[in-house]
Image (cartoon, rainbow, N blue to C red; front, side, top):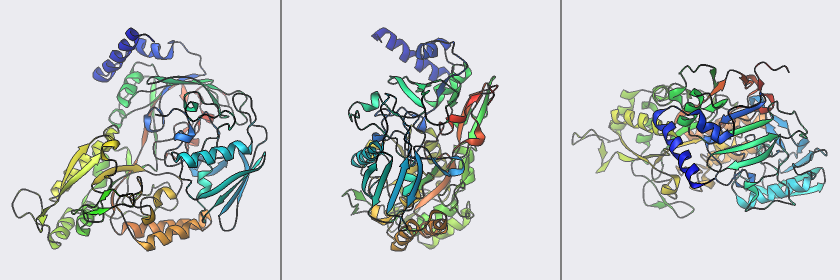
Length: 537
């Protein structure tokens, strides 16, 4: 692309975002032609809505957002199907030992990578060993070893009991050992999934074509072009008719667009605000500063939790596209439990009064022993709804006499400071471990895990107990663990977010077979069932 064309493209995109109307010619420039076959799709929808920084490489996080999502290009051993059920992909069957320390997986013998080479258990072992080394996909810290027993069997050995490890078998796309290159694979990936990688124009689009040699159910759509647009630009593309499927911001979700309908997917992507449990002057296990003198007071945390009206936050920040939650576990998951009553402002004020937090100088902010009830509430502004949540919660906190000072910036700006302030977090998936990471003291302050620095050995013991139990039998233990952890009020859990897409009326996304959306969504999870609205099965 020459410089003149690049400048024109940038100007066009700015115009889309600014005035809210798209030129069909701009999107034709990206996709190459305004005319396309009935079995070709143009979308503006990706997990997290973002272009993958390191390309389409599972070793660097592609296909993983607090749980496995459909990677399209690669295959996984297992998948999360409808209702979060585990189903086979490459695997024909799997077995866990009675102590959940050994997992043996048998795989298909008829699978080929897109370059025609055969996929074997050696590729599976290579992929998992490499992913553990990079540490940028699912958490494999408990995996002691993985090896190919023969071409169609792979064995995983863990260093401790973990019945949730079955979810890890659905998290990682398998790459070819013979040709994988860490530096270049993401730019030109070869997998064995339902779609072949064709082209990536960085900052603009990725083009995928159907793998007609795919071993599983073949998708109806032969070509998918996905445009990397923010949600404002995506809505403009919808209005101009240039895309078939587009993720849009909640502020647009109630609008009527001729020729399109809204698809709304509930999720287990939970939003919450961390409240550090320890006072200032401490360090995390990684040596980073930790503690906050305001949120370290249990009265502050309790008052916020019962005083904040979560339904009001959902209505104002998410335009009603979400489900309130006081426990941080998605209502679609089998180990959730009942919410408590919130929005009790008078009771929250009394808790603060009784704990000695009073406004003695009339500035509207409580103080105690010379410490003002004022601290930072940080959010990631690229995700607009998190900014909206921060604003809505801080406004309600003011009514309680608490001053949550808003700060929005990039994650790099607060790296190593996660345990010193309140942060609007998002996360959650089908794997119960995604909940455990919020509270496990052995992970406190490590990366994004347990940023509140909770240290409760009884919570840790319940996590270990749940992991040693059969999956269905473990659900009551996971629920008990979360209830015990949340008794410390380490977060203001707000609720789950819905994922909203405008879809061309000629496209059927088969919402009845949609997977459970975790953190970042899983728009491609049931791509095998997508078809033209008038197509026959």
